[in-house]
Every structure is written in C-alpha cells, then in structure tokens.
Length: 315
Length: 76
Image (cartoon, rainbow over all chains, first blue to last red; front, side, top):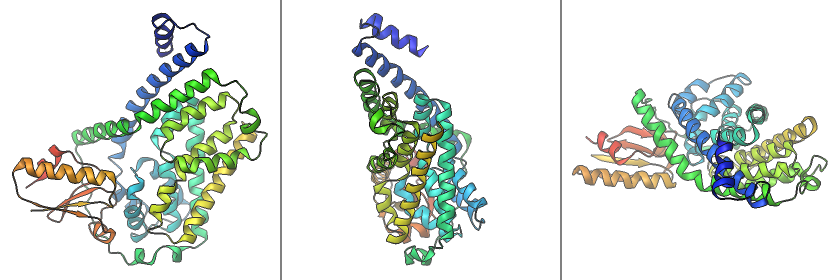
C-alpha cells in the first residue's frame, strides 16, 4: 500500500525515472518516512498507556529486597515498561537503593531502561524487520541481566557516593489515574516525543535514502563487514557520543547494512548508542564514585562487543 | 499556597515552571512558586521521576510536564 503510494508519487506525479538514482532515493525517503511515522505514532501511544500502569515508585516496590538473578531478570523486564529519562536518573537511583533494591538489580534496570526503548524498537522493526527487533530486545535484556549480576557480584556498594546511603526518602503515594487520564497522558507523551524526534527521523531517513541511492554497494564491506574484527569495538566507540539519537541513527545504519555493514556490528552499534551515553555518565557521577562508573561502562561495553561478535558469527 | 517545582534543572523542569507561572496568573490566585533543585529535598518527597509538582507539601504530578490546564485543575 505505502510502497505503491510512494512509487506513484515519485514516478507518476513527480516524474522521476524508476531505477534512476534520484528516483530511487526519493522513493525510499517517502516510503520510509511515512512508514516510520505511522509506526511511531501508534506504538508510542500504546506504550505510553502501558507505562501509566508502571510508575517508577511501583517498580521500586516490586524490586525492593529481591534476590539476585530473579531480581535482575525482573529489573531488566520492568526497564522496558517503566518510563525513564536520563535527567531523573539520580532520584531514581537513590530511590531504588534506599528502598533496598540490590545494587546489581538497580544496574540491570538502569541498563535495560534506555537500551530497550520503544523508539529504537520501532525503528528497528520498521527498517530491519521484526526478527532483528526481537533479537535486539532479547540480547538487550541479556546484556542488562548479565552486567547487573556481574556488578552485584563485585560487591561495589562502597563505590556509591556516601551521601546516597544517608538520604531520607519520603513516601509519595502512587497517584492512580483514570482511564481517561491515561489516554490524555499518552496523547501528550506521544506528541512531545514526536516533536522531539521528528527532525532526527527526517534527517536520518534522508541521509539513509542518499546512501541507498548514491553510495556503491559493498562500499563498507571491507571496513565494516564481518571479516574485520575491529569493526565491532569501533562501532561501539562511535555509538557513545550519539546518545539519544536512535531515531536518526537507525535509518543511516540501515542503509549502511545494504552497503556491506555486518548485522552483529549494527546491533552492537545500536546498543552503544542507546545504552552508553556521556550525558548519562555525567549525571550518574552524582551518585557513583569513579571506579563504579568505569566498571559499569566497561562491563556494559564489553557485553555489547560480545553481542556484536556473536551475531556476526551466526547470522 | 506554596507551589514547588522539583527537578535538577533539566529543560522539562523549566517548561513546568513556566506553565505553573501561567496557570497561577490565569487563575488569579496568589501563590509562592519555588524551584527545588537539591536532590535531598526532592528525595524527601519520595519523587523518583522529575519534573514533579508539589502543592502545599503534596505531590500532584511527577515525571511529566503538566499543562497549564492540568495545573489550574489542581490549584486550590
């Protein structure tokens, strides 16, 4: 349906020639932009409604005094549905550890929440298909669980800033929303998020379309193909400064896979973009001493690199 | 009436603060509006997602930028 519409618009109305570079690039741009915005609008709205049932205060209660392993798995799963913004990472972290959520379990949450987010999933699903999106969810959760367990085993409680343990945390009652209020919230949330990410999507898809139409196939095969063992760590390092731009990055990466970038490298890159971010590190410095911060980033980066190698080997 | 806007100084907190000012002006009520940026004070309310809005010591919204209309609805 959408494909026909894009073809009709580009080739019949605008009059570009099918198979020409400009024609293919524009066709690709229009098709992808419409598809992604349709997906984004509907899915963000649905996710926002689900999220109203999982405020962080409730998640905290579910996780408090949970044992390792089960706690890590639960935390990673709750990370998907609990709304999280890196700007509230500090109150969230303090709230968790103060109410007896084990440190490793808290980290499983902190890793999964930004990484397995709806925008990244929608973009992956829309451009790479549901299989890659599912693999991303599965391995993302695995990275969060394993990294959380390792951090828990390292017993690094003394590397949390001391004041955190002395903080007095009040008990805000959880405000119950009516269904009407949930819909209002979801509408507001969807509009706000779309307003924030639409330029990235358009620019990302635009650049992707340009690459699709103009960059020769196999352009990247030599550097970012599966035979280059350095491609994965380099992709992870490049992902760090691109924080929160999953919406803009995925279309570009998608076009690059057509030019020979291996899929494991793509997954590792995406995970680095969402899970490893400098602004978040700076914010977390308020609650973590340097050593724990470095361990946290190191373990997550290492786990992501492993994911990259794994999928380059098997896919 | 004392209105507190809780948040560690992110863009959303600023928007919420502006919305509160508009809501108070529109309602014609008098209120003291303060920004609360210190983590211990924010935690004392048990708020885990910012920005949050507190009126006379009661958390009204947390983790969202309430609209002017929504804030008018909770002004007493």
